[in-house]
Length: 196
Figure (cartoon, rainbow, N blue to C red):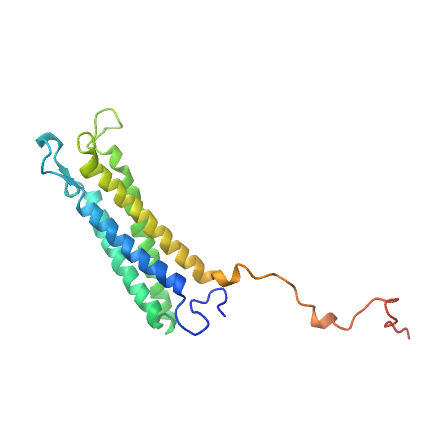
């Protein structure tokens, strides 16, 4: 039976819930990358409204960061599936570093993607880049941010389940009698108290 902090199930195989969430993190990171790569408004847009994610360094970072998060979590999922995470302290430290880096990439990507509303607005004093390119650029950029957030949440839940497995959620917290007090009873209860 799995216990808190145990990433394996009863038969020694990787915990299926945490592994599934790792794989979901990879898939969502790839989806976020694809959405950002398609965030452009060039064909069919008026020249003044033509815009692409490649016009902004922050959005190019989002594309690279989501790719790196997907690759890092693919490695993490492989390590868990193959049981290599338990080889040594160095491997465990590397796994923690991979998770921390992945969460940093995903959360920062999400924040930058959602900030597209402010691009070119000069503090909302003028019309920003989203005017005239709402669907093909801003909508996809926001969707990329939302998917990055979902990937980060999936990873966080996976890490939580590694510490507190589902199997422990429904266990009663019945306290066993203290063996050190097993023979101690009060006087006047069944005549078990002997005075010297």
